[in-house]
Length: 419
Image (cartoon, rainbow, N blue to C red; front, side, top):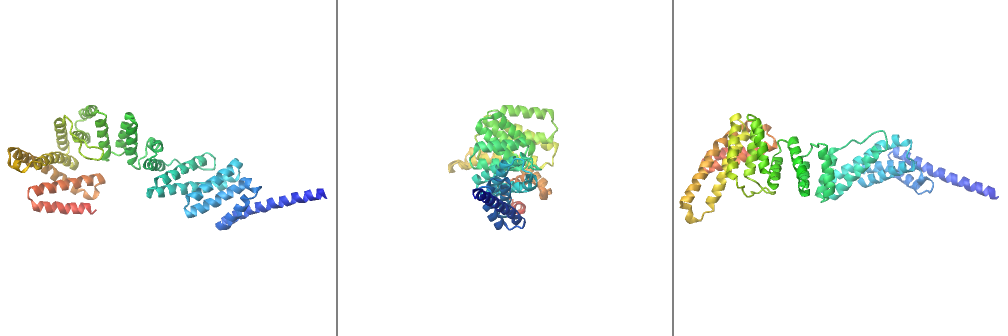
């Protein structure tokens, strides 16, 4: 009887295991029918059994069900559970035959669901959650690519950048630096903000060589983005290396005296050195050699216009040089008290203001003609420049009491700002 009893116990255990394996098979079938609730109930029963809870197949099916649920609900939490289940399956059976056929696409979907959740958090400015999801997505990609599942998740430079961006916004500077540096090393071109932030991080680290290298890389990738000229000016100003910059630029001009783009770039850079701004964009104190720098900038703008008289940007920049100087003298004039308003000093300042405004006017008008001729095709940077040009023209015409011209410019401004 004892032998018979033992035999019956073994038989009962075998039937129990078979029943639970049937639950795994049933869960798989219900998954194929998209009956996810039944599928999950079946697989949960198998996971609670001491025998089947340690089988790779059980965890594989659990992962597939969780992936389907997570993808349908766009739930990063369910996707993470699916990832953990797939991981568990391969821990139990690293050479699992079903993995390539049954885990490949679901695991990629898990990666995509979690990455997309990171982007959703980013849009909502939930920086910490975004960072967590992005980092988990990279973890999954590394896992997927290391398991020979019949495919690879390619390097996503945009995701690398946005992970660094989220980290920076969350105040996680070390994470930000790691990801942003990697994105820059991969020459990411999708967002110039990468190089703005990375440059700031190098500045904070006191790494002048890489700070400048990042700015130069950004200028090569985004030649029309004026922020990087400003960053370069700030670099040389903060590091006290303006002489090195001038020497470098003047050498370049000497080698290419008829290169209009190089001449104009030099003029703008020198103009910015003469008129530095702080990190908030406010006027900073003028350098000791202000007059020398302004004269160099003025001569270079004139040279650029000589090389290309119709260049709207060059004409605007020279007009702005005169106009900005007039504004400085006008502020000085307005700061005089009532008794000084009729003094020789006031008359001298008034003469300077009027003279500089008159100098600026023809260059602004030439720039207006150039920009208006291609107004429908202006990029964001040129559109902003044109808008500044029109505001300056409106101001000058108002000072001259030329109301007809003021109205004409106002119509152009209204049309430009409505586009």
